[in-house]
Amino acid sequence: MKKSVIAIFMLVFVLLIGCGKPVQTNEGNNDVNGNVQTEDETAGKSAVVYTNTQYGFNFSLPDSWKGYTIVDETWEGAATGESDGEKIVENGPLISIRHPQWTAEKPRQDIPIMVFTTEQWNSLLEGKFHIGAAPIDPSELGRNNSYVFALPARYNYSFPEGYEEVEEILKGNPLQPINK
Image (tube, rainbow, N blue to C red; front, side, top):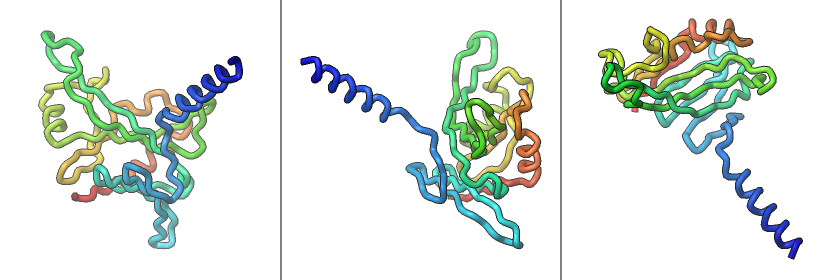
């Protein structure tokens, strides 16, 4: 009896642990969302390219980011105006590209990419909702036929290790939209 209770407990534990949503690791293969990591060696310079086929964009990274991971989260937009208070009226994907040297003990600056439908983006610019406490809107990185890709306002406010590298990456306009 005691052995069967322990066996059932262990089985439930293994099932619960196995059902958690893991961070996606991109090591040159496709994942379920169609994310692909490839290497681009144009002009004699090696680079890593993150391709997101679900939303339609490529993102170029330096070779030091080979082995990055993708963290899928959700951004939330709160209504503006006194009557609605902080009611969440919009949300969408927040895709963070995480440096391969990132650890829980020593986090590094992620590259966060907010994904908006064009309708959501226009509503944000019209002031129909806001994201976070910053008095400025996200910065557009690019757009395709269906989506606008943006960098959250104050994404690097805490200046974690690697924030300078991320700023340099972003200066090179690394996001290239793919029309679907």
